[in-house]
Length: 462
Image (cartoon, rainbow, N blue to C red; front, top):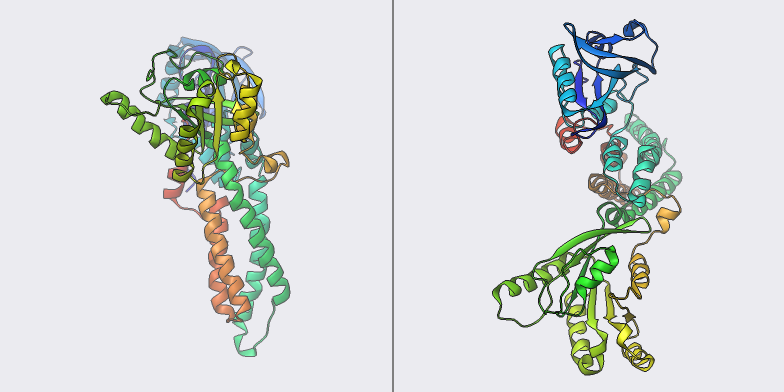
């Protein structure tokens, strides 16, 4: 299954820049590079030590393409586990393409998406969950997602799964041994210890499964829908949160007719804010479409922020309470943040009255940037970052989550079998299946289709 050919790809983003890095990997990587590289000191790079840098020119048939810095990494002490060469050239797109085309003519082929990391996995440099963490690390855009990806790439998650699998495998071996001596009716596996092990494995699996709720929002961001009647300051609030003029603001009701989305990182956690069309009765066809989209976005959001004009509270208080009750009934499981905007126009008595009637109310002035930080703190309170602060293993990958659920199901079957005193051969079937799902996570059990799906999401040069 391990490929033998030599691959090449651009490892830096496409386009012009100060420098670009072209990566070559495979058994013939160094000898192929030697065909086009001329060292300024006359060195033969095929005779140089691993992890060394060499200044020279990329040339062919007397034509010089560029002056470059060439790095040599000899397998197995490289990222892929194979001989690897990285060419740092000037960042002209013309130079990049000329060098890559030259290497293709000399026997390389273009790498597939994620093929360098795939080779690292196939050569035992990374297990499958660590390889997936590489893609998460590249995609991380906030502190929390970066921290989780780094922990997984260092093997935190893999090591936890490997320990559980090894302990279960030891007991599975004893259970299987009992099957060979079925006629003698002997037990090699201590049932009390086995029961304790299953409880411990079940506890860890449940903790990892529960962590996915946090991991998923950290990885993908928390969608927050900003809703309310027209002209209460929803777009102004979005602009205040983002600290930029992202949404159009005017005194004309119904200005926002489509949803506007943007992201903000608060204390390392990503939030996706969605500014929606104002909710009201309207005969305007375009505006009514926007209002329908508002309810769709509320359905998709994990947090709903309801904004109203606090200066109108004394007049519209009862209608507001009715509207809030409708939202709570329609979305009972979603956190609802109630915000009274334009609080700078209120007297202290009006503020006190509003808070008495709606104790959970947050008073802000989006225009004057008053209370916006309190809103950010409120949003952060919906994210359980305790596991993140304690550096616990957090699951962010849907594939891992699915395998953990299936493994827990099999472990629970074994627990039931142990309590029911069923025969060892029936328990052995469920144990084998649990071991299979553990192996799926780290790549000890895999297939070409699974690998293809995973690495297809990588960038070409990784």
